[in-house]
Length: 489
Image (cartoon, rainbow, N blue to C red; front, side, top):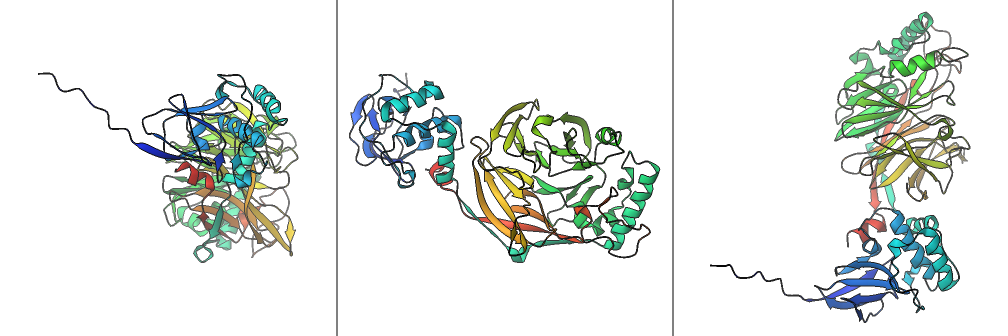
């Protein structure tokens, strides 16, 4: 006996609203090819129908009805992140917006239809801009449209739990003994940094501010820190679990050690972790105009895998202070240090390590001293150790960057005494943003030592790693961006 034929659920009448920021009206809506009457962006249709949404005869999308249709639904594939497709859509809608004020929503006036059958997805940017100009006498480049979207949708607020700062305090006697041993070893062989490896676990636990002074990343829920020559894995309370005080790859140090003008030292910046691999940016700290690298480590053992990739010098005119890995997009990002060249975001393929493109930044990082960055919710968050003076203090900043448009939003600022350094940042599994801030250091001496000037400004081993203390600061997002609200509709 044959089973009865399957029946589809009974179709119902659904009320649909178009959402922009805050509204979207003036689109032509068709259900199964027939025009639908809309009232200020709201209409009712059969839930089983197929909707076609158009503007000036240009097809934006063909989708199934849902209670709220947002800009993200009007792309060839729904995507809540910044994409070229979203840029094209925003370019068209913002160009046609009747009052040119996206802050009060997007309202499209009645327009003469363009050629029938035109689909937005099939238009090149040049054709799109020409069409916009033909329709309303103005146009908006895709990047400018995306930046308008960023400005409208990506504002957010963060707040620090100041009472919960994690303090790291160095035992300066242990640190000086360490430096004495290192300087002795350097005097024997200045081309290598093997002296930095001579540190017991007990000694490492006594100088936490030094060994956590450059960057951090999370391997799941486990924090991993970097300092200029090494790596350290900790437990959830930031106590050392695995110390690699010298993790700088020997093959890279050999290149720097043989540099003209005397041996140079390598320098590890703010690291990142993805899919079991730790990515470390490495530069010549004595001449950062030299070749920079991304070295790949095993994230669990912190052992160098032997894989390194040279970064193009033209895009890293003053070294590479950090690397940020975007695993979902299979990309990673860098910006050169604080030179005049720090006005673009470099986008690399995570598998081939080839440069894909460089994205001009809306706000240049020249002079901003960006020391660390990570991807969170598809956006790049960057810690800037600016030296701008405000009421006698040095202003530090956290930026949010769209890696597609190059939009730069300043999220928050805080002020610190001179010679305090804002270093790397990372996001924990719960979304908490953790930021390393190193306390000011003084020169030349903290206490007695066998070396006359262990903390001076000479070639010896001076720097922010010899500070007496540091704090790990914890920020919680108090107001999410409108983009996430729209994405959840």
